[in-house]
Amino acid sequence: MFKTLMKNFILTIGAFVLCLSASAQSIRPEWDVRFQTAVINDEFDISNCILAPSGTLAAFNFSPYAGIGFGDGHSVKMGVNVQKDFGTEGDKPRAEFAAWYQYNSKNGFTLAAGIFPFALIKGRYSTLIFSDASSFNDVHCDGVLLRWERERSNYEVALDWSGKLGATRREEFYVVSAGEGWVTPWLALCWEGCFHHYACSEAVLGVVDDHILHPYLQFEFSSLLPMDRFEISLGGVAGYQMDRRTDVRKLPLGTDVVVDLSKWGFGVRNQFYYGQNQMPFFHEKDAAGQEFGKNLYFRSSWWQIRRDNVAEGLYNRLDAYWTKSFGDYVNLGVHAVFHFDHLGLLGSQQILQASVNLEALPFWKKK
Image (cartoon, rainbow, N blue to C red):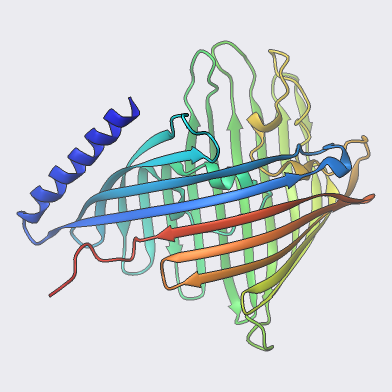
């Protein structure tokens, strides 16, 4: 089945490109090939996996796209993402098709609609919004993206319709937004947030609202010091959680401080949070008696903060990392991550990431 789909896809794209070569000059072929691989090793036994289980994600995503550009900044593209876990010889890879319309204006406005690569969503999103694993696994967005990029600011909002109502499939969608506006060369007003609607299936009734907003002040002092990055951010975290079936409503609040320093590709990032559980329904059960867990929350499980029924607590994530770019196309990253709470070390992660993006390469060499 998979081989047939891939063969039909390649033949369609080939015929599509051949037709374009004979078309008018106002219509031009466009292409984009993306590859990313990640190894995320979670070692949380030291805390008895109380907030997150140990495990390893090791896989790659390969995403070729092709289409036509027309007019001034308009394009229509289609393609497929192929994902394969390491060590699963004989298992078929997972394939997901995409097709979308995209508009890029000269003044920095971007519109995308359809099923498009998540790579088009460029805002800063922490693990409050997407966990490390969900950032890798969720390759396509099914919906709409609006983004504005200016010299001193950028803003975006995106809708992802991630679940259509079915016999066992829940109706589900979420809206994410991020932005930053630089007031001075060293101070920006920023935010990240998510509005998440997790509704019922035909078999299981119930709706849960899962919303979170993280506004923060971003200070950037690298221009004043001999550093590639010297960022400090101060923010607040406000959540709104409601299980409409049981009429239980929670408003978890907290505050965080992030320090990120780097030089020559080597860096240290520390995020300290003090406040309430931002995943209060994680271990609650739906109408079928199943825990909501990661079916409801795609943020990192560490944002449960603590499991001893104390109203609030602290969470600290420390990243030591090295990143390297090779030209405009290849990026590597190695991270050693340590998680702490009020009792000490909760566990650690080792993360290896590599990505290749050939979007910037021309379709053919100009003579």
